[in-house]
Amino acid sequence: MTRPSAERTRVRDRLLDGTRFLVASHARPDGDSLGSQLALAEALTQLGKEVRVVNADPPPARYAFLPGAAAIEVAGSVEDDADTAVVLECGTLGRTEVSGLAGRPVVNIDHHAGNTGYGAVNWCDESACACGELVFELIEALGAELTPSIATNVYVAILTDTGSFRHANITARTFDICRRIAGTGVDAAAVAARVFNNGSLGRLRLTGRVIDRMRLEADGRIAVLAVDEAMLRETGCEADDLEGVVNLPLAAGDVKAVILLKALGGGLRVSLRSKDEIDVRRVAVSFGGGGHRNAAGLTVEDPASDVRARLVRQVAAAIAESRPA
Ligand SMILES: [Mn+2]
Image: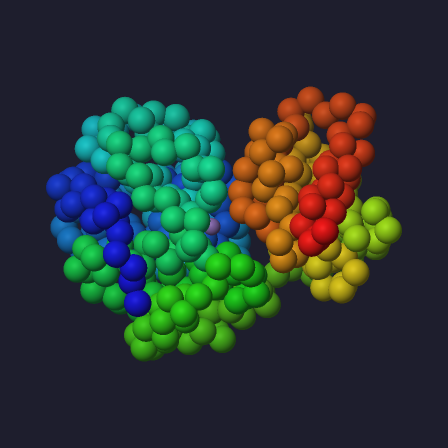
């Protein structure tokens, strides 16, 4: 089920040549970044490599059960004589928020459109539903054994990045990988329950509050959600507890796109979601962000008062453009 890929072969050869690795991914990790990192780290370890997994932020609590998660180092910079850095799931090297990675050749593996190709070797495939799909193929190409722990990590990557098998880019390849994961004895329902049914009551209350304050724009086609520090404080939550909330308004048939505004700490972080052909990545890019057609994000360091209106206008334009004339 794998497709021929010269890039994958180059990445494989580079990894086989290396001996000491740093495996990094983006700040504020999610299921795909963590699952991809931990699966690849285990495979490299199997091959006799020395591996450090380094991220700018610790894993959210719901991912603490991932095999290998306890060994993740949290650091804003690395001083290390590792010979190879593998960066997963990052459109730019800066997304890691870990400095010092580029002190050695970087292997860049990603599935985001607009990846800047910052690596010495790059494998970027937008058609993958999750970075974990690419990592699975790479592990196979490396000749490492598909253990239940590698399988669990890849499964979490795919499960979360596809919105539980609902998003775009799910293909026969996706299900073939999952079939092989299940073949190792991974209990898919149990893994999903640990990720999704293990949150705090505070998180549930926060979700209720965010949805309660939802505003509709563009004749009800855009849902705007807003979160501030006070909402987190009052519900005893962390910013991590917002993962997935941005998708909830899409459950309403009339809602075609979602704008989530997070005024936490300094700037304004914005997540965008959309249905079908509506391209919110372009909106994110115009604000200096990035992502995928249906899921994108951006940060406004110094938010002007009209930023919400500008976002609504651009998302409304994206909706209008997606309709056949
Ligand atoms: Mn991803």
